[in-house]
Length: 210
Image (cartoon, one colour):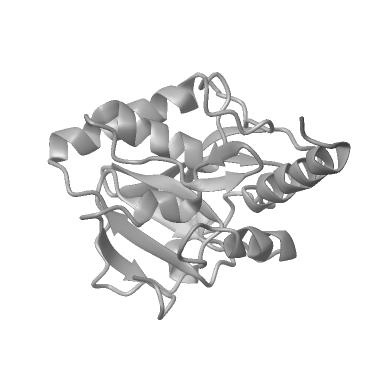
């Protein structure tokens, strides 16, 4: 049986993980891709994985607790609608702990972000459509952010769980498995998502990203 000290450590980890998946609220006013240094050669595709490193201390802490590659702290999925790029991701407020699955313009998702990357899943376009279909289903249901980080159900989801579930519901056998462990639980680390065999790095601002 785990000690109270052990439970306290897990509770602290949950707090770190939650805040690393959270961020400040931005308005849409005057946000544009011109504010983000995106090379013209970078072409986003439906179903791409987008990762970022938040600017807070706790985001940096969570980055260090990834399984293998310690670069990012948050992840989402790219949705293309006509000429616009949206990001579907699960995020909670730093102030209240309340959050849900969001659909945000790319410019807002990358506002004030210096470290980020795009990764592509080696599947057909129809499968990418299905991945985004499942991600949008969580969004349309206003699925709450999961502060308990429970992989057993998806009535609530945390950031990496949302992306893993959307991918795994669209492919068989599942592509993404949780490898980051804390206590007697397994969690989806950010690198558990994009460091899958065959996943292709399209672009990253971090020179050490694989």
